[in-house]
Image (cartoon, rainbow, N blue to C red; front, side):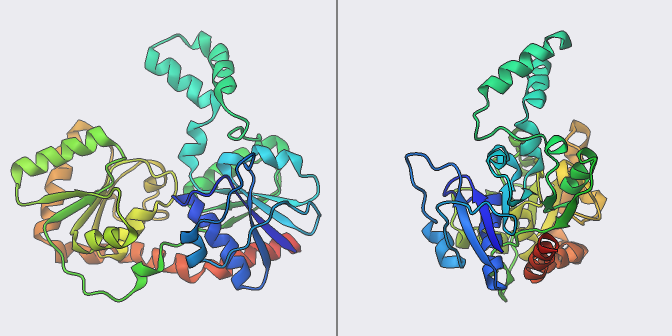
Amino acid sequence: MKIYVAIPDNGTKGGVESLYQFASGCRDIGYQSYVYYFRQTSKVYQIPESMSRKYNLHKAEKVEDSAENVIIFPEMYTYPLRKFHYIKKCIWFLSLNYYLESDPVYKAKESLRKRKLPKVLLPAAVIAMAAMTTSSFRRIRIHKEKIPYYLYNCEYAHNFINSVCNYPCFTHYLCGPIDDIYFESLNIKKEKIVSYNPKKCTEYTNKVIELVSDARPDIMFIPIQAMTIEKVREVLMRSSVYMDLGKFPGPERIPREAVMMNCNIITSMLGSAGNNDIDVPIKSEYKFELTDINLEKIQNLIIDMIDNYELYVSFFDKYRQKVIEQKRRLHADIQEFLSACSS
């Protein structure tokens, strides 16, 4: 059995690294696996050097479309699955929110809502949005195509798969772990620092930062952006709090990295963060709806987590254990999935 992991291009961010981890993990346990760049046209993609250094990877120029083989596509790029006829097909849900938001129907509804236009215009808006969507981003309708295998990296995505697949299919949990450097023994010393992702929920996050800074000028806010992995780890090691008030389309890497660096965690309730005891298993008191009434509550919680850091840090042990299990179980989860494919 040959396993092909379909990747759109030679980027390395977000869920793409999970695809490389899967291809590498297959080889680690004895399977033939290949990275397959399905969007190649005049440009021929090569495996990025950063991924080659970290993972055991091999590239395939074409796919052997036979019944004993398996191909895995990320959910954002399912349309190319149509050209394969015999190979076992699998879709891996890595970022559900981005999947939903790229759907022409969803985009059309949002466009009408923002422009305050009547719903009677929805059919025309859907046609317009579909015409703007390139073939690389078009998705097959999974409930019509009856894809037999699905992977998901969070319960949030699993629930979606179950809601749209009205036919027998195999679903299996598989989550790409964070980098090995976050599992090394470190001498972590905390400071009055709150780190955050500045690309997520900017306006609301800035309101929180302004409130806290006015009340406590001694608390520093550091945005996680344009940093090497070593610099990100160094900032998280110093941070007493990591704040992410944006969407959680999947399990999200930086919050998992933060909890392994013993940060106290504050999140929104969006996406996978809405599953209090499953995807982001922290207390509901540390998750917030993004309303003005909660701004002061978040401010007070940040200040208390800074001033009483040691009282809070153990409350995130369950989340830390989940992140550790994702790394420990990677090969076993891959094996379970491939065994199902070969049975």
